[in-house]
Image 1 (cartoon, rainbow, N blue to C red):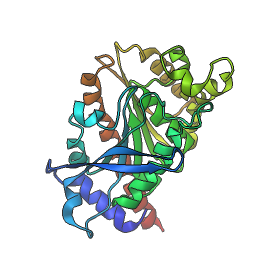
Image 2 (cartoon, rainbow, N blue to C red):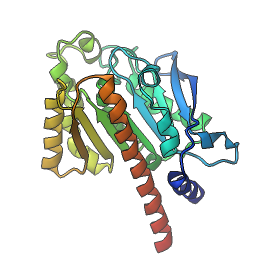
Image 3 (cartoon, rainbow, N blue to C red):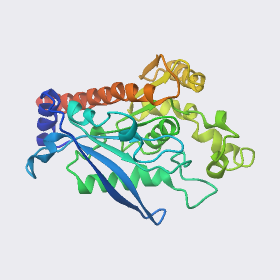
Length: 284
């Protein structure tokens, strides 16, 4: 991380919030899918200070099944978190039932590449980001929770932190749901793929690739058991992570509260990265 970026990152994270975030919609092309998709970008107030203003870490926040790039701003007050934690928030469109993967059966559905590579490249080239793994995080709800964890695992050099809210972390438990087999393939014919992409199958990689991890799920959510199993596997492997079950179900009331904890966690990882960089320079 550039020392100038580190200085500004530390300064921004201790500055008082101004609650004047800016939300805009951008069009992001996908070479992988030969289409252009919209995304919501929320900038903190400090971003408007001009070209000499500091660069910012980025948190990517994914919507769930049936949703789109407008879901988070329409159903929560997520925008205020950009100012509170001095981050850029990016909410890309992941398709209604894409699961944020590159489908083994539908070459037109390559949302893993789109969100994990193409969106990140676009944001870094069009906004003043700190374009490093240590200043980039990804999370999401339900299908987006699975997608966020899968994208981070598949691109360990791109994301330093990942999270999931009410995540469908084991798609094998969603077998038979409308639309899922169109992107995953037949569960018998493509059993190896279904097993490989389940987050629990790659749980140890979060530790190996130094990806800071936080997971939460409502205690009355139908997906809570698969989240508990993932948590137990991470504990068994000794992989550091945060895990929480809070009252609530698979609802926007739960997610609009949960996202505050997620972004707070990511801000903490950004601060730690800045401290580590500072300490490394001091020791050099």
